[in-house]
Length: 384
Image (cartoon, one colour):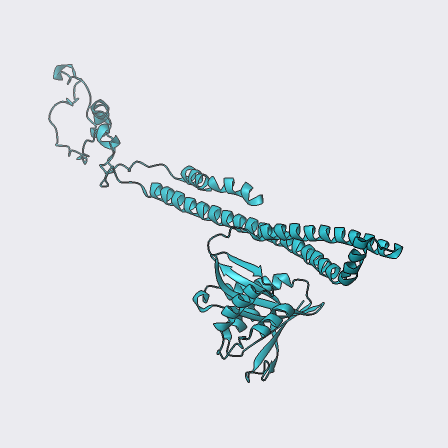
C-alpha cells in the first residue's frame, strides 16, 4: 500500500522540476546601445553661451560721436584677437541612441534555458516511469509470492490430514475380523447365534459404518487435495508435484534417472525395486515446466532436526534454465524448521557447489567413495 501512495506523487515529479526551472530562469536582456556618443545641448543654448566664451558684447555697435572724448569705439577694428577653436562633436539624435543594435543571432533560435527545461522534463518523466515500473513489478511479485505461499500451506494441511485418514483406514482394514465374521454370518443364516456372536456381529456392523465413513472422508480429502494442486501455471512457472510409490510414478522416476546414468557426478538408479524403496524413504517431487516433466528433487528426514538433500536430476533439455536453483530453494522452504540440513555433491559439480554455497551451505568434509561408486563427495551443511 505504501508504494501505491508513492506512485501518484512520482507522476508530478517532472512537472515540479519544470516549474522550478522556469521560475529561476533569467529574462532576456536587450543588447546595450553601441557607440558612446553624448547628447549635445540644443542650438539655442549653445548660441546663448557663445558670448561668454568668446568675450564679445551683445547688441548694436555705438555711434562714434556719442562716445566721450578720448574713448575708443569698441566696434572699430582693433588688434586681431585670436579666436578660440573648440572641437566639434558629431550630432547624434535620440532615436539613434535609443534604438538597439541589430542582433547577429536569428530571432527563431531557441534559447539555451528553454532547451534545458525540455531536457529536464524528459529526464524527469523517464525517471518517474522507471520508478513506477519497478514499484509495480515489485508489488506484483510480492503478491504472487504471498498467494503461492498461502496456497502451498493450504495444500500441505490438506495433504497431512489426508495421510492421517488414509493411515486410519489401512489400520481399520487390517484389524477387520474377516474370518470370524464369515463364520458368524453362517450361523446367523442358520439362526444359531449365541449372545456373544450377536454382540460381535453388532460391533462388526458399527465398525463397518465407521470404515465406510472414514473411506468417504478420505475420498473427499483426496478430491480437495487434487483441486488444490490443480492450478493453471503461468508461462515458465515450475510445478512441484509429490511423487507416490505407484507404478506410474516409479516409471516417471526411472525415466528421469535414466538421463543421469553413467555420469561421473551422479549415481543414477535403474532398478524399479530400488526406485520404489527410494520413493518410500524420501520425499520425492516431480518438477514440471509448461506441463512437461523437467526433473526430480528429493530429501530425506534423518532426525526431527536434521534433513538430507538426497538428490536432484534435471533432464538435459531443461538444463541451463535455473531449475536446479529453484528446486534447491523449494526444498529449503519445505525444511524451514530444520536446524541442520546436509547435502553431498561431487567435487567436479561446480554448478551445484556454487548454488549450495550461495544458499548458505558450508563445506564440512570430503568423503571418498561416498555412494559406493568409487567417486568422492563433498559434504556441505547448513545450520540454523
